[in-house]
Image 1: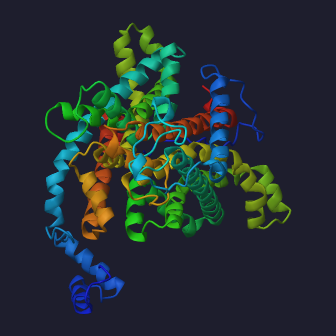
Image 2 (image 1 turned 135 degrees about the horizontal axis):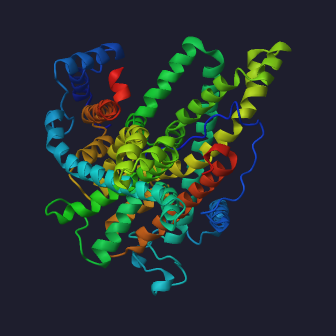
Image 3 (image 1 turned 120 degrees about the horizontal axis):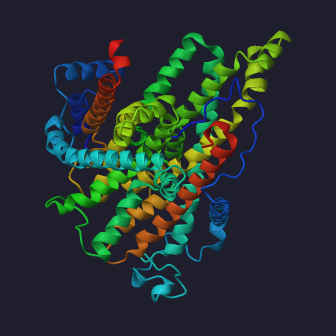
Length: 300
Length: 268
């Protein structure tokens, strides 16, 4: 799951400051992007509206109506996607699971971006031993698979929701730290930085006002690409039973529960699978598109 | 410790586990025990963690090694073919498939293959170990996670190499296409791929943890998950130690392979 993201190289030297949008590439039709954007938009809307539109409470059990099939397989309108092994409404649980998963993913990406960008900025600006220390931490974390780090952290810190969000957020901050640091170092020799320095701007002012805006596009590309990975990480942990804990549900934990009923009621597993794949593939497609348009070098 | 445990037993257990010492003493004690080759006992089964692990590691290797070989084979052939037929239908579908495959989680692939091949078609068993049939689904699931990535990278590196002057020279001196592509092309394109394969090994280990859980495979990954669930720290510590050592070893192998493949590195 530690997927290699081909991080756009810092844009220096021969390329211009302004990023130009790429002409539409052959090979991936724009339809894929429009569909991906609408899927993500729809998912976010459904997640936000979940408390208003769910027909049942997610913990409401009714043992008399256990394992009912979805409506298109002969179920009732009361439970459009059927019920699980405790008679809970699958549709409601699916909506809330999407809500949890998306919330953790957004929070995780946000933490990663903020922590990584700050770390990279500090490390690149200060230089010297501070830079070496931060780089060593970053390299060490990049060498160990994220899932293992997260497993250890869960074992040590417990499965409190906040802990989970922090663990997932800090699971890939090092990528942002790396590219931001690289960008800071690469920008040091540029004339506009020198001009700022000559006019008496302090190193921090240069870092915040002149360097930071120039790291924007690689960070956006990385964030959009790692969104899908964070969804995968969260649902893997929840699937294994060490992520989101009951009574809360996430797409991974739904799938983890459904695994025990694969033979009798496969739809319990199919619905969360479909939602996860829709979210991650849509996010990855958009990330790929952003990379292609914002990074002039990756056009092939 | 359960909350209803009597106070006397609690004090005894604390003393036995050395929890009364400060953190530094505990940590140094652990380090010293490691140097003596004493990795501790599982809190639950009271057996040495090394023994517990050694029972399971071969099962994990039986899963990861074929998956790695399969993944590299598919990745190399797919990437090579796509680069040689640049912008063909195969090339474009491979690029799309890479994006899609990288986004789909391991356990979703696992569950989907179980649903299709075990439940609908009733061809293959859905979990456990036994005959060769038990290997097919987990190995494929594990291999799929990394092969798309390898294929994409091989394609990119090959495209770069194919545009070089020495490739045109090799062709113009009348070498057979196979020699040109494999000896002159692939050998130059393979170095960055090797680096990523070393890093992917870590991903493969993490993937094995999930895949073993999906397919009820009695491997080391599930042992670690159980250790996390039960807060069996001695077992978990050793698990992380073993996995980290394996990853470092894989990266060392990659460095050695560099030297074998590239004479320029060997001479330094």
